[in-house]
Length: 152
Image 1 (cartoon, helix red, strand yellow):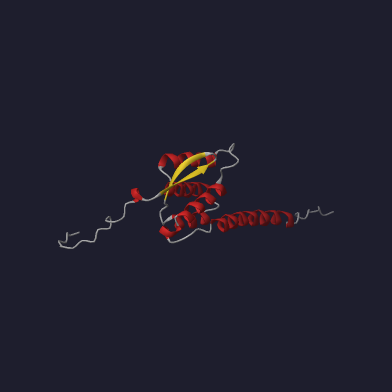
Image 2: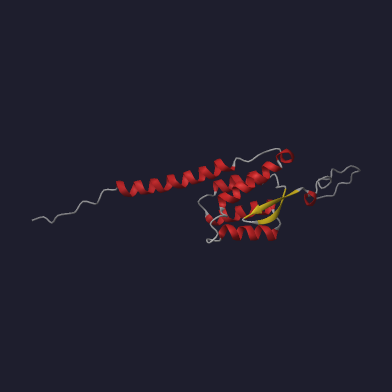
């Protein structure tokens, strides 16, 4: 691609410095972390999270991306470990989604949107329950195969 010389350049980096984005302290299971104003793409990640509800590997990766959108890498790793720890009954996916909603609500004037995570989480749980119910119904409505009798 040829280089174009011009006296005028629109600089996409000018005026936007993610490192200077405001922060807010948040408490997770008794420990205080620093949450950064989330990227505006957090909405897209939540849509992906909702769409990938049945693929656990993708679900985990999207959840990790959501954590990275608000926390530094070390804190995101620590929080993901808490979510995945079966002995930690308090911090789970719904707990963290509620925290995301609260942080986004805190920065709503700067971001220009709020999240409706509670509905999304309930919808996901509703879909899972519907799938289980449909599977149970399928197995209970099956007829036993007719036995063949030997001709006399």
